[in-house]
Amino acid sequence: MKSKFALYSLAIGAFALGMNGCGSKKEETTDTSAPAATAPAGKSVDSATAGEITGSVTLDGAPPKMKPINMAAEVTCAKQHTSPVLSEEVVTGDKGALANVVVYVKSGLDGFSFPAPTDAVTIDQKGCQYHPHVLALQPGQDLKVVNSDPTAHNIHPVPKDNREWNESQPPNTPPIDKNFARSEIAIPVKCNVHPWMKAYIAVAPNPYFQVTEKDGKFDLKNLPPGTYTLVAWHELYGPSEQTVTIGPKESKAVAFTFKASAPAAD
Amino acid sequence: MRSSKTTLMPTVYNRNLHRYAVFTACCTFLLLIAGALVTSNDAGLSIPDWPLAFGSLNPPMVGGIVYEWSHRVMATCVGLLTIGLAVWLWMGDPRVWMKRLGLVALGGVIAQGILGGMTVRMFQPPAVSAAHATLAQLFFSTVVAIAVFTSEWWQSDVVRMEDTGDPPIRSLAVWTAGAVFLQLILGAAFRHKAFGLDPHLAGAGIVAVLIFMTAGALKRRFPSSQPLRKSARILHILIGVQLLLGGGAWWSRVYAARFPQPIPVMVLLTVTHTVTGALVLAATLVTTLLSYRILRPGAVVAGSSSTSEQVAS
Image 1 (cartoon, rainbow over the protein chains, first blue to last red):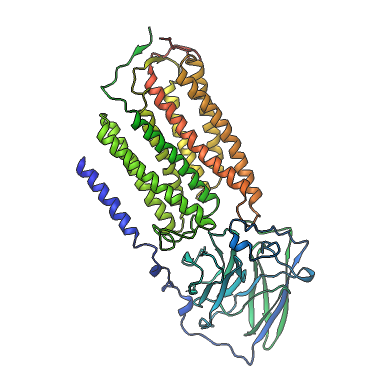
Image 2 (cartoon, rainbow over the protein chains, first blue to last red):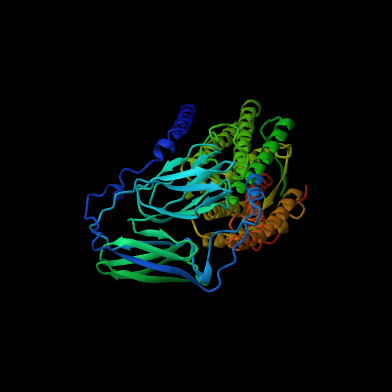
């Protein structure tokens, strides 16, 4: 009995020591088994025949009233704002233009390869909010996380198809560099220190993507002729798809409309 | 005569040990509150590293870090208290099973610490988080049991009574405690996104029925037994409160869903519902212990389920 107890104690102790090797920063790096960033070379786009898809995204109906964010739990956050801060779940411009929509080409580019861009995309934590609220990049493209606040944050993306990570970022520390290996639309990002902080990172499968601003407009240039599935994704209203065919040097306009009364099911 | 005195094995009641056990149980209850606050405020991963916090033992106490770090500090205190309890029981309690129970409590708190670290390192996988929440309740019940077993009442001569009802109180109490434990697992699984709500709702119905049956049988059969009557009253109060809190917690979660952050009413109701669940488990466990301590099975008398068979001493 005593020897069994000693054995169990040793096992628990060994397990606890083994935990020290788990979840370390070394493991929170790019998954090297991912195909997207290291795909074999394929066709490249011929600018002489490339066309474009332009368009707009609008919200049909009165947008939901955004709730104010209560930053009283941390004075450092609250005093950076002179007016009430609202949730950014639904942001509209004139005539129902819908911002923060990720528009991207989901399919139709078989045979083409697109190396990851070398320029980094930056997300900044300022005023205890993420800027931008929605961003897009490609698999393997660098994401630079900056903390411009005088307080500590943790940056915690919660992906389904990529490796999850969670890192602390005290004030006045260097940016954190990460990337995501697989396309995924979209990865929620949160800060558990400040639970109102939310952002979304869309890892698009190819370079044809854009996040709409308050004018709701998008313009996907340099698309080879073909038939594409175009998707507009919003964090509350979910995805909406359309099939678009463009010919050589053709420009086609597409309009996406989301209904304000029909948020996507959780 | 259907009552008899009971003589226990020789033991020495240690008032200080009992008080220490009670203190540990109270601190554990506060730790449960701290843990529930972490979950309800979504602060579980506000400190990405473990066992240190932001690489030190003195993290910036802002936002969610306040909840998570406080929880870790309180857990450490409860761990130290449990070590003391296990050592004291080993050295000072002549009952071999009590020495072992102290070690069980110690093993529980160590396992709980490991699970807590795993929730951080593995980014809160639902199964691990639910296991951490469930073990917390079990550990609390263990410490409560130690407090009961070290009490003067438990170690004194107790007038035992015969229970000729059907089903026996002992069986009812065990089933009820078991059902409550399963219900807590379902609640933890829902809270940590391993299951949906439906199993927990169904469990609530079963638990309520069992608690009413047990408490009702206690009151009917042993109206003059003060410990059993008190136990029944506590069960009635707790299940009533818990059902109301459950409804309130669910309403508050639906209401709070479109707010950009956890809101105070949701945090209050969900935390209170969680820790009241722990109290329900402890109460059903104590009822079970009392039923084994005070009652002994008797021959079932036909039609005796609502008849008190107790004879006052």
